[in-house]
Length: 186
Image 1 (tube, rainbow, N blue to C red):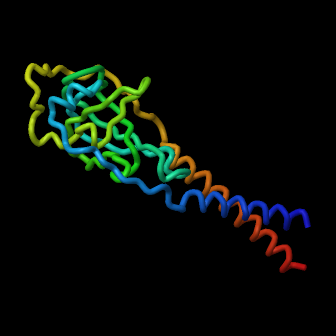
Image 2: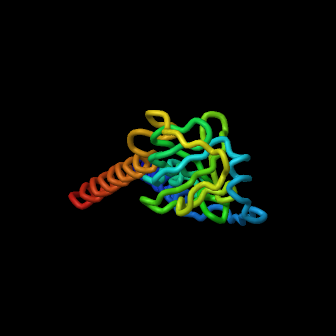
């Protein structure tokens, strides 16, 4: 009887975790009020740099579809602010929430603002593909600082959560199969 109660609780917890991971999040609508030019974007930004998009880290996505994501860039040039050679920039999760959707391997001109120790950007900040150079008079380009900033090392939390979920599922299956085989041998 205790085992049956344990299985029901385990099943309820597993169902809840699956529902949280799969259910859709909030709906958003982004409105920037018209595209400002590079000069306005440069003036408002705390950091401006050019870099190749490397990857997107989304540590909170497993638990909330509206969790921000980190875009990681290999920085080639800095026009303003303190920027590391490998720089992470936080953005909202979807373009409807003004989040930046970067394409792998693309070179971007990033306009970011500082929020404590991290850099943030969105489509309203003016970040764009670096197809045309920055059009700001007297902007001086310099190399990035060595190292990385705003980038998680190691396995992303989403991967660790998926592994933990798989291990839990395997444990539940083994308990159920063990219970079934004992019942069949009686």
